[in-house]
Length: 462
Ligand SMILES: *Cc1c(COP(=O)(O)O)cnc(C)c1O
Image (cartoon, rainbow, N blue to C red; front, side):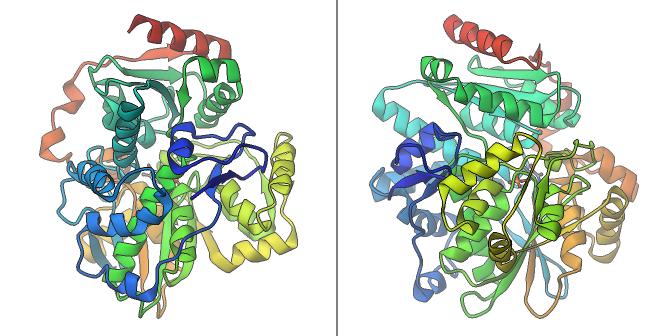
């Protein structure tokens, strides 16, 4: 299995190389050269299997010869061992034909653990075998950073630096990043918003001297291995609801388009998905794009669902690559135009996108009302991101079962939940003391040179 760049101008890599590299050297994102498919029989055979067994079947064809079957099974087993639910990704019912896929039973209480715990184990295995060290730098709107730190803390061959927007993550998200005491963990509070964090990260990857000097590796949602890990729960949930004999739709609270793109890959692999609904909060670039065909940046307005406060949705580039018939030159051209703030999508590409994706947005008031409504109607406590999903999904309910992805535990966003329903959701008992722990964090300017200097100094000190 070979991986190619969405901008058509970077070396082809193996799964392991693409995973360790992250962003392609032409600025593009790696995607598999072809999407393997599972037969109806193979999909049907997932029924009744454990999450780990399903994960092996779904991901194996993408990995090539990077690991033996036994090695890959061991990696998967270690990745999901710290989850606190036997099913890993359990489904609960909200209403007739509407289900919630709870993706928050991992160590940091958000769906990003599904990918990050796997990637931690993959990196550890590969780097130990190669006798190499890498520097992981990640940008986060909150949940990626804590998930990355939790996945990489204490590993010998990795330093992990996480950039988060100062003052714009929830207190619990911040504590999850700043309280680990491992010496290979570095939490950096940047003076700017999430898009600034993401832009500085991209700048570091485009500074080849720095990139090669510190052996930079990326674990943001642009990393193909993360997308791959997220494909699995589309299969397990759809099969629970009767796939492949019955179609299923999904609504996905979306920011960087990684999670919903994984659903698109599941569909390409043969899972009978009727509809993939993009759910955005008031930062609705993707919804506006689906409506108008124009991808136009606007400023980010902080919301009660901060992990979706994004205006440049990196993984959307992968969907564009397919919509443009896998023409890397065309994608590179669009991304060049985006430097001036906008690009227009061709009519043919829009038709392809609309074949797969629908969309909707939830305002702050609608999100709050949805949290209150779900608690009244079925006793389910939703986090604000999941509530955005449920609100948008409600417009698409029908004969086909709808699965809305619940991306975080409500206790990660206690203020928004308390405002909506008058009760404060409690952290799970094993995390109850987190808010009292000491923090370790460095405030940093929104400046590439200063960041690179800091990272080099920290690595030298180890
Ligand atoms: C990251 C995140 C999202 C958005 O996921 P993308 O893959 O970036 O679209 C939604 N909800 C929560 C809680 C998140 O942490």
